[in-house]
Image 1 (cartoon, helix red, strand yellow):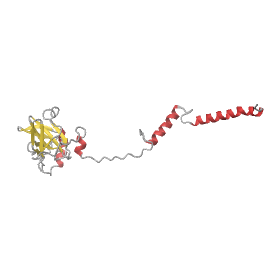
Image 2: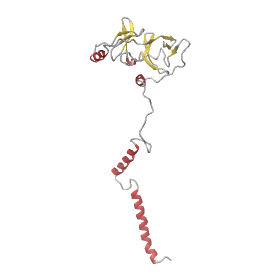
Image 3: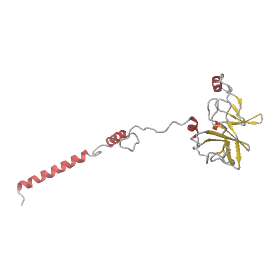
Length: 218
């Protein structure tokens, strides 16, 4: 039979255990804290990891991407870097990848391409004829993907929206060099007053069925 002294100590021991449990629970995150206090704790935790980070020890983010050329940055919104099937045939003709004469130019008569070699070109379809040139203008290196196709004295030409320079699509010859016909073009044209007109590099095109082949003359 338990002694009277041990029976008297039992309630005290139980109270001590209960008090210890309450202290343990009270020390747990969020126990007894208001909604604002719990929210502040969560914000502190998130801030320590970096906003929106899922890593425990997120350090500064370092990008391994190399800076792309201007034309690549411009075209990446619309066209992927496309690889030709091979390096061309024995005559140096290279097939333009993913280009079909009947379907490619339906929505827009200009098709920009970045070839596997890194060369950036533009194809222009005027009627049943396809022309090929470098993808940038010569005055201010403006992408010709948004150029305007014109008819100048019965010949197909292309106008640069930025500075207004016009090139003959068949020969690449400059028909109009940085004309000062708008306020902005007066400034741009003034900067080129002492520069000689620079022709646009163009390349021979051969249509074989619905496929387009281009020969890049060295």
